Image 1 (cartoon, rainbow, N blue to C red):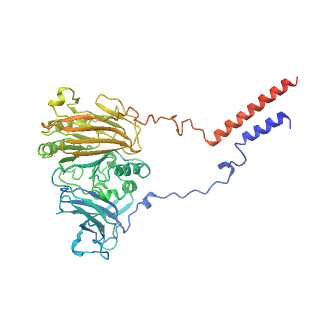
Image 2 (tube, helix red, strand yellow):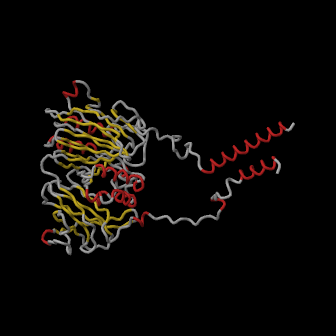
Length: 496
């Protein structure tokens, strides 16, 4: 074969798209379409209880609420409760069973028809419990039962404890938020509750998204109580707050009129935790909030809501929230120590702030300030800014926060979905009730400590620099052709 022929063969081979054994989709018959599951069917209710979740509806030292779901065929719903023992003696048929040790309580049931799904939601508030005591419970209809879950009541005096705080879950809930929820639990398996700062789902009326949210955390929801507050994505219809909210979360109803179970507070071992609804009725909540802060016997005060008082993203300011509530925080006799927020899909955290200013120098010793945090736990991420109020900032990372209270110290850690430390600080109470702020070592920059997530970074997908298999073969084939052409030219020159 002549050199020209050899080059022609290689050129034809190169244009064929790859080696003979490389089967491209275009070389084969179209594959049968893969069946895709219908989320409305995947998350349909049945006889067995699902979406079991603990919340607080009263004093966490003496009560514990639980909510669950079944299909509409259930005629009666009950919950069973017993003191936790080392063995299985709370279930009939097992070693040590004592029927007198098990309480059976009828549930309150309500029908919910939403998103093309009809279901019954059931709730029981266990009351008359003993502080600092472990209990087991299960829910069902007397025949079809959930598994047994376990919880522990709060102490009725201040004691050390920890809790978890999540910003928006909202998107990619089952596939991507689940590892954040489970990672947070693995880092703090004895967390006493979980704060959700709004936008738990993307469409509050989509039952399948609530199915994803409950499935992502799974049994954790049945063991660790949730303290949720609604975001704007729980306000997705003309009726305001999604119809799913109140049936599936049994919460205190002592808030302002029209905001029951979306504006409330609990006292937990020396901390008052206040959940506000930043979507509506700001003035009414400010009037309610003043006395709640003034008549507060606790050493620490934590407030959570969705829309930030100070946004970490330019152009996403919430002046109505700031003007209504910030001055109430500042005026509180004991102050507000920490505000936990969501909404902006990035990370920002202040120093001690008062009257829109960061305290410094002697101001820290003479005035009480509040730390404001904004975080995100889901996969929808925005680029953050570098605004004057921000002591720490970061973007491009899914995060969870671990908060511990021990006497005169509150410690805060923000961690990435990988578990890496992202931000940390400690608040230390002074005798006058104010706080000293001790910064941690983690200092996230504009793109977070893991670096930029922009296209073109190492390992990038679309828009990046990684070569796929076909591109690599094309490059090799082109190089071979050029090498042969060069060889042929050299051979011809030497033959002259």
